[in-house]
Amino acid sequence: MKKALSILSIFGVAVLAALVPDAAFAQESTSGELTRLGLALGAGLGIAIAAGVAGLGQGRATAAALSGIARNPGASSKILTPMIIGLALIESLVIYALLIAFLLQGKI
Amino acid sequence: MEHFSWFTLIGMDKYDYILGSIVVLILLTLAGLSIKKALSRKDAVLPEEKFSLRTVFEILTLDFLFDLFTNMLGSKKQAKKYFPLLGASFFFILFANLLGLVPGFLPPTGNFNVPVACALVIFVMYNYYGLKENGWAYLKHFAGPVIFLAPLMIIIEIISHLVRPVSLSLRLFMNITGDHMVLGIFTNLLHYVIPALFVGLGLFVSFLQAFIFTVLSAIYIALATSHEADIE
Image (cartoon, rainbow over the protein chains, first blue to last red):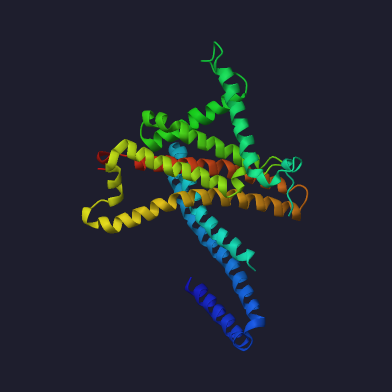
């Protein structure tokens, strides 16, 4: 986890460092490019991170529900309904991020 | 990505969602009339042998929805009281979502206005039921558990109450729109067999979103109409 964060931060710093000379020299012609790069990166990375973390969350919910069913197979329908509700609520957070990604992508 | 809908033949394809909602309401009315006719025969107490519209609706409403609302709202009497609003929202949203799977129709819930309308109705009605049930003591729900935390808790509670219709409508709208878009993109990529899987996904998502909307509305009504003594 920490290794992934450090790799991501190094990548972000590298992108910014590569683009600062361009942005400092010519504002009008390449600021459009920089804006479009920012919008595209934001849209792509936003939905990717949201979907990845939601996958982890839904995995935990399903694992807890499965272990409950394994202990008590007779209660499986009573466990299934709250599990479905929990999965849909977690998924709705991804849907909010998808909406922002669509709005950003429409402005490129 | 173009979309053909039957309403382009009449030339009113800008108003797809209004005409789609009217089609859903006509379908629901016809289903209701046919079930009423089936229920008013003399031996209506016995269930029918074959698979008919009446048995499908009996399974959906009595076995599924009524037991769900009895669990959420606490008692059968409460479930019967709020069943018209919640059942109507479940069936309207279910049929509206399913209409998008029929070739040539756009789902009415795929336009932003229709889920907002459904969520606003639920928002107004649960506040109304809370005020009717508890009187002005309903406002004590906003104050939180302890009295001297009240200024902080009122702000937090008001914000969370205002977010509820936003989240209900946004979840429904984006799920149906996203599913429709995914179906469109995959039909563009692979024209023949694989898009059938996405129609199956569309069926699942339609049912699940109608179910989630109704369950959350039932929970909001249960929270609003709960008496102080029940919380202890």
